[in-house]
Each structure stands twice: as C-alpha cells, then as structure tokens.
Image (cartoon, rainbow, N blue to C red; front, side, top):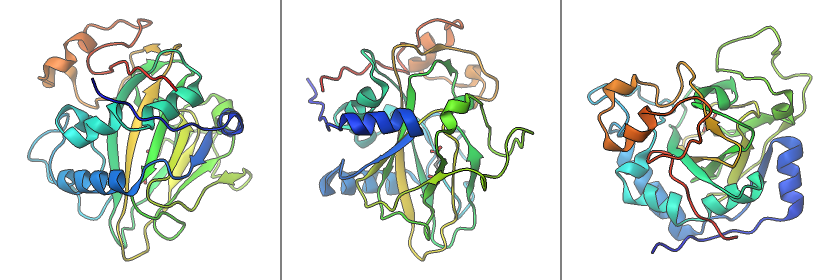
Length: 267
Ligand SMILES: O=C(O)CCC(=O)C(=O)O
C-alpha cells in the first residue's frame, strides 16, 4: 500500500483560491523530492512521452511539455500517488472524490525567447465542471527574470474559455486587470483553477527554469467531448490499454477510468 503524504493548507488559503483563482503555497516539497523530480525531468526532456509521436524532433530552447509520464516513469508516478500534490488539490477543490488527469513539465531553457501566451486550461481538457485545478510545482527558483507565471486575478469568475493565441473580442491584454504573481523557491507550488487566465514570461536569465505540473478534478466534473483537447491526438492512434475505458466515454459520464484514476486522500 502506498503512503500518500499530505500538506495542510489554511482556510484562508482555500478562500483565496476561490476568490482569486490562484494561490502560491510555500515549501510543499523538500529538497529530496525536488532533486528527485529534477532528475526525472532532465531524464525525460529529450525523449517522447507515452502520448507523443516518436521521432518528432523537439524545438530547441523552447518550453517543453509532455503528458502522462506517470504511465511510464516511477518518479512521476510517485509524485501523483505519494506526494502531497493530491492533498493540496483535494483541499482547494473541497471535493470528496479526486481524479488525477495528467502530469507534464515545462522547461524554459536559458535565454529562451519563447513565452506561453495568455490562456486558461479548461478548453484543453475533455471535461466539464467547476472543481478542477492545476498544481504548478517549481523545481528552480522562479521570478520575473526567468519565466514566472502571471495570473489575471479572479478571471476564473468570468467563466470564459481562452485558448492561447485565439484573440477573442472579449479579451484584452491585461493592462486594466490586477495581476498576481510570486517569486518562488524550488519546492513551492502554484495552484490555479482551470479557468484562471495566465501566461508565462520569457527566460532572460542564464539558467534553466523547470516546473512539473499535475492536473486534478473533483466531484462535479464529467466527461465532455472537445475538439483539439487532451490527449491532442486521434484516439485511434493511441495504442495503450490504459485508454480503452476512456475511449468508451459518453458526454456527461463520470470521468473515472484507468487513464484518469481516482486518488484517495485523507487530509
Ligand atoms: O510553465 C510555463 O511556462 C507555463 C505553464 C502554463 O501556462 C500552464 O501550465 O498552463
């Protein structure tokens, strides 16, 4: 039986998550965990993840992102099923049930000019519902100079979906809005609601900036078919047994399936 580690957050932090759509939680993972996940990211940065096409060259220096390494990598699996990530998600979502969607990582190489544009996460997932969040775990010191994330405060309450680069008429570059961002140490986490609009700035420093993400849902989330959503490939191209129950899902059904496992948390 795996032991799931927990990290208690305060009622004020849960309230801030609900009000602002994002919080920063300090010192969630210790140095041993951080070093373990750095090694896991470094090991995977140049190889295709289990859901990616093999042999497609990865653009150098830019943000890398791969999903569902937990299927093939023991360290990512441990992050999902043994680390305090699940307990953080359960607390902010105030959920009885917790499902894990997928992991991923983002590496901004030194002096990388690429940035991640304004977006929120919900339009990229085949789900519908309110109780959903991402945990962005810093593996390096993160600040304005090396590619921190910036959030439009309370934008989850707009209930609008924004894909990166989609430029809809209702969205203005965020001068009129209050921005939330934090300087972070390795082991600190951001937790944001899937509808909170955010971006990340360029890395002008001479060191890389690494982060690992995990995505979580709660009681009210159901399957919903969205074009151009995770896993970002036609399902008939994915030949993994873990996808069989997912392929049979109908809109409105609970999302529980092998690829979106339930995780038991007792905070
Ligand atoms: O890490 C980054 O640079 C961007 C992360 C992001 O936008 C996301 O996880 O949705």
